[in-house]
Picture (tube, rainbow, N blue to C red):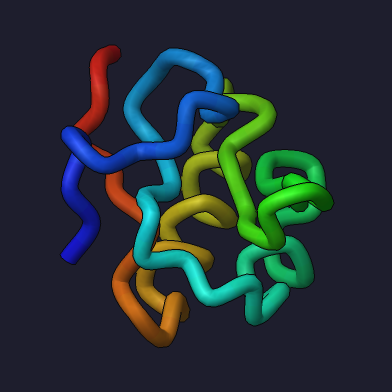
Length: 78
């Protein structure tokens, strides 16, 4: 389960975030490429844009539920 205290600094403020458990599997970027981006230097994903619509939120939730290591959280600052 993702921990908001361990989220990457590249995450934009908001509900969704990626923490330091990310293994750079690319799954979240495949599911929701408009929201998750890769930090090339460190080799991990982060939230580049927060969802604004129900459709956006559904994609981010699908990415969260699909993350093999639970590195995506949705309990960040709103």
